[in-house]
Image 1: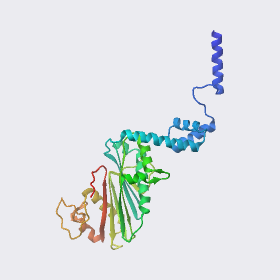
Image 2: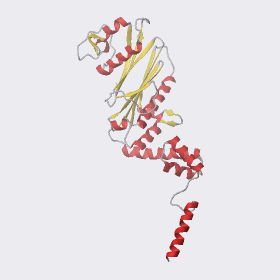
Image 3: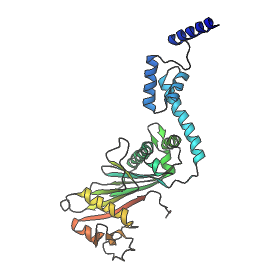
Image 4: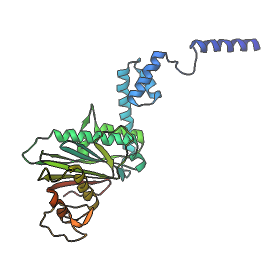
Amino acid sequence: MAALSGFLRSKLFSWQQAGLFHSGLRLLASDKELLVKLRRKTGYSFVNCKKALEKFNNDAKQAETWLHQQAQKEGWNKASKLQGRKTAEGLVGLLQEGNTAVMVEVNCETDFVARNVKFQQLVQQAALCTLRHCRSQEQHQASYSKGLIPGEEILQMKTDDVTIKDVLALTIGKLGENMLMRRAAWVMVSSDLFIGTYMHGALQPDLPSLTNMSYGKYGSLVVCRKADTDSTSNITELGRRLGQHVVGMNPLTVGSLEDESTGDAETRMLAQPFLLEPSLTVGQYLHPHGVQVLDFVRFECGEETHTP
């Protein structure tokens, strides 16, 4: 019996060495390289990538398609289960390119997830889609255009070959929190105007981000006309200061230079004490710079909004 047992052990060892008997599938070097490439390209687990390659006989293209389909299915299942859970955290994303700027708000359950790279990628893709949408709009004779987009419309926009709705579901599936595509705003101006931008509580993103994109909890866009091209040397800094005022003082309207301030309760921007120089109103601060404020947009992550 001992001799038979020794014989079986020796045969088992030789089979294992030859790759004929093992607990898992032994991959050839080429198969392993294919698996690594699929894993790197899709970001899905080795187990799922291996399963996909086995299912489609090492056809990487079919395997990738199947992985995305499965991920969407699982993401939607998880999204359905998590629906209704409160989404009070999240991020505002601000993207500016030339004469166009957009802001988007995406909500989640915790600040921990808001700082996750996959969540930031979702915000970035929503901002890029909003920017493309803005630039596709018919241009009118007005010196600037502004639009507000509800979350339901953003979800129907496409990034590459998938909708933002699918990207949202995938992100929910991966991070395990309920999320909400809340809203977006865009502004496009003519050459004689400029857009001031400001992001408060800005994050240092964990992903290779667009250089002209920022993330935070409060954001603003301010549409301005500069009357004298020589009167202000640093338009960007002036625009940032005005955006900072909009975030900090939360005006409701622009108002006019003739408005008299009613004090701390003032809601007309030009009549408010300027945040960075409270001895002056915003109108008084702007006068020597030859700058006129035409409009603004302010986002606060998680704020209650009311339809006019």
